[in-house]
Length: 420
Image (cartoon, rainbow, N blue to C red):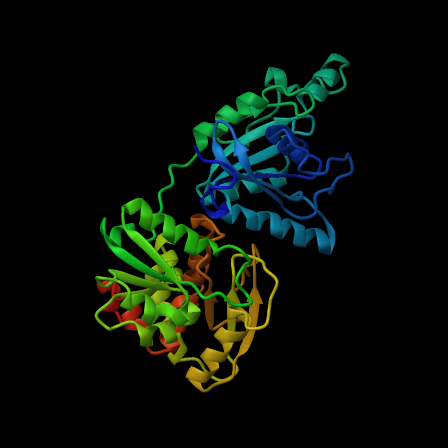
């Protein structure tokens, strides 16, 4: 059975809670998870930034719960919070629209529901604070809005959207909400596996994983872990080495490997060590195909030929980490690009959930493999680039291109290699 440690964030069901300030989002997420993940207060605007928590939520299984700031926040800072909240829709698999049953539906809620419909997201509308509404109804304070007797106006909610009334305080209908969420889980299937369809049982695959100052201590990075698992699940064997030991590793194999998969930053050195008849590609190229974006990324990398001095390049990563000397995104990649083109560019960087809505200032976007982002988020980013006619590619393809080995790095994908 799946557990907290076995499922990467990018492979989890992403459940986002959205609504106005003080609608009860934080209380609801605490009730759903049985933990005090979010700070709860009567003061509107307590949640200022998205709160993310990977966990098991039965009967769904591994999920990523996302609590967001109110969509009706005000002021300059409030507008930024609203923008961040709405950005979280781009990675949401199931949206929970939270409405205070005593306050009813506001214009912000209607606009939010329209956004969710436009994005074709699974959604449930949750009316909160049923315990307070009952008290108010008993004392004639809010007799016309008793959610327990379904008197809340739902004219703005499409009949196709499921609705439920809950109380985070008493636990009323919390279990029923979990059951409802389980039935809303989208049937997700990645466009392609990482590499299992490219290899056969009994094959040997050589993996090249540089261990430098930027590598995590005591473990491999996520794409390497996922690739190894995909290989052994296929019945093939994974041999792992560093870039300085590739020649030695190949010499010790009785038969040539079916494929060599390398970290993109070692492309140049590994290309020199691996005979031309052996297929060579990278983790990030395989990850781009796994997320469904490889073809657009292959077409996007050609923009490197047309860039001019002073053009603006955006380098975006899906995770956040401490930048170190020799970091691939901020140091190595910009250096290789400038050396290859002989030009100087303006560079900008984003990480984590940050991705600009307006991409017009950029002439090229270079993204990491996106192992920490789910398929929906990665496809959203590539769609944004395509809609605004900005070429977008990824680390592996860009590095292969600047090292003159792009066609070889796509040898396992003959149809795409023909496009070059």
